[in-house]
Length: 422
Image 1: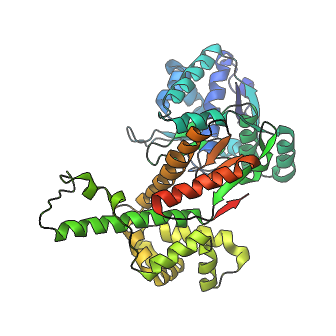
Image 2: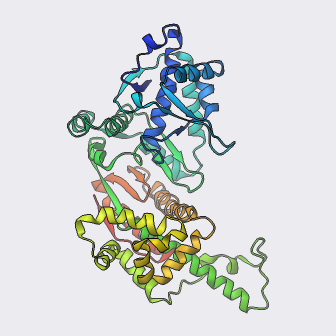
Image 3: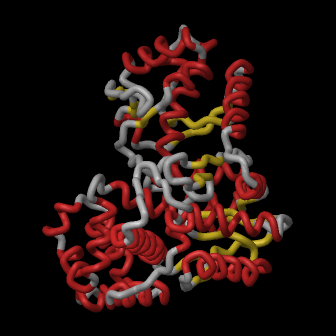
């Protein structure tokens, strides 16, 4: 097994009396680096949460604290001692001297560590939810290859002067080349996280399946478009409550429903749009013209689209509600789409982070539990993998997969997304 440690980490000189434990030190440092690379919550200066119980199981309980303290004493790592039981563990990061340089590859040969790592990975595989869609996607992940030579040439040419990006890209390339894949299902939102979902868009061009290049089938304006699902749920819930309120023969306890499923299941209710801005929002996001419309209204040039997109979401969808009043993006959106804006604030009224979670749940339910499940049943022989709201596949499968995506959106929500092929 290969691990990555700072290129200036001179183990033999730093710990001459610990040579038998070399691989344990390497693995400890590697996990700090690996979690930083593959978890997008972290930036290069973040403290990295490491699950102490798992780490102790792999390197050995009696060595864990000794190794950690030795690394601390030599100013190789630092610790944030805050933690919350069942929520998050203590966190670590490399000291500046070791954090801002390129990593080097080392080989782990300790048989005990290798056996424990294998056992841990087997447990993760067993934790994958049941369902044809998950096994289908997990099996397909292992079939992905990467043009290692060209990918390494590319990052050497473009990112050799930026150790942070270079390290992340190189390890991403090496993991795929060595078939070191991970497949995790987010228990909160249902999203699937893999090497490919974490891979930079820059490097996707080097991926292939059996030598065939891959295409990405993506939903235009995906996050604003998917919010139409939450809009429908909100409107249907309001309709349901109004039905109950005005029907004296029905009794409904929202914590313990006592009426038949034909009344309580909001999916059985019609979605009736009565506000012009809801209709305009659905039309623009369905046609993939939402950002262009807002940019024109805000006087933003087309070359600044990516910057505007990021700023818009951060200051309208994914920020504290009270901050809306200070952001020009939110003010413009509220003026143009007052009803949509009120629905956004509804989803954020208890905790602004719940909107993002609800969007991710809607995305995962549609793309994984409906689209991918259907493909796994109808065409189990074809290759696909997901990047959250998009699907990577080969050119020959393009028409079929586009048809399935469009059909599932129409069948479940009477929505028609605009699809783009990259």
